[in-house]
Length: 432
Image 1 (cartoon, rainbow, N blue to C red):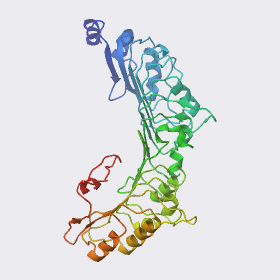
Image 2 (cartoon, one colour; image 1 turned 90 degrees about the vertical axis):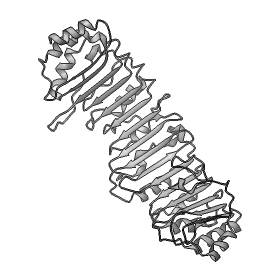
Image 3 (cartoon, one colour; image 1 turned 135 degrees about the vertical axis):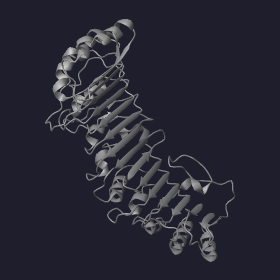
Image 4 (cartoon, rainbow, N blue to C red; image 1 turned 90 degrees about the horizontal axis):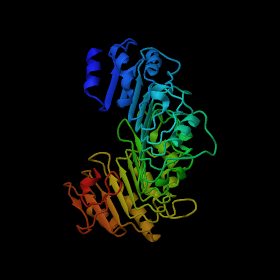
């Protein structure tokens, strides 16, 4: 305590970054808590790491105003089961946090009613128990923080207390990250997310369906009102769906899928507006019979590139692309220019008859493909089949028997996109 008092005296009026915590819990009689309360007016940042039993008394000891504090982080750890997270009383630092820039609350809750959060730019809320914070409470808090740029909810997505018709505009939001298994749609239905925002959703399971993690209307996500790129990646233990608009993106990642993630993804695509999508990539997907590819592709009137990478049933997509494949006779993806195929193994080859039949049907219907690219695989195509396909496609690129790529396109042409969906290039390596 004496050393701490000396530090405070010698540092005069300079701002203080304070971290309060002890490896074996923080005693209420800790010397630090006897000295620091008299210096809260100098606090620039405060981090408190303690247990639920201690947070109340510590809050009381730190009740003096902190007019210059910019960062506040409270983390309560507990080794036993609790029925509710402790409440962080609004007497902390006098209850007026008008200078606060970032607020991080982990395993602790607040009534979210601190006055004047005008300067808050970053909010993290983590590990709140169900019912601790309602949608209405969080909306009220978000509405009082007009400068928010970053919102992170880590296993703290509220699902109770929705308010029909209420919308909160987050005009400066740049990042919203939501982690947990609770459906996000209840909250997102009340938020207007501006152009340029990145929305990242990590769910422990998509057993409720992808749509439960999206707002009722994509009008809420103004940057995604015109979806241009869709990437469905089922390669590995964490399948993800990326819906990208002109200036932002939604990323939904499933940590441990309990059902067919491809089926859920296709059902999701069948419910949202994909009429302006220009790019669709599916990696290691297995199209479900409950929502066949043509039902999804039928709505993609502006699709220009389709990439099927190591999919189990690529022939279902190829057959769906035939002009008039739907019962209405409408052309499937009338603006499609490029089809990219990556086989599952190095020895696999695609059914060339399916490709030829599809390309011929599209050419006859006046929606001729510009490019067919087959990347990888050592089986190659026989020259006769390649020539026949070339009658209906302007450029055909495929691996020959020795692994080389044959193409009748000039070297200056390139239509590949990187994983983000907007890079251009002619190098086939971009696709891998």
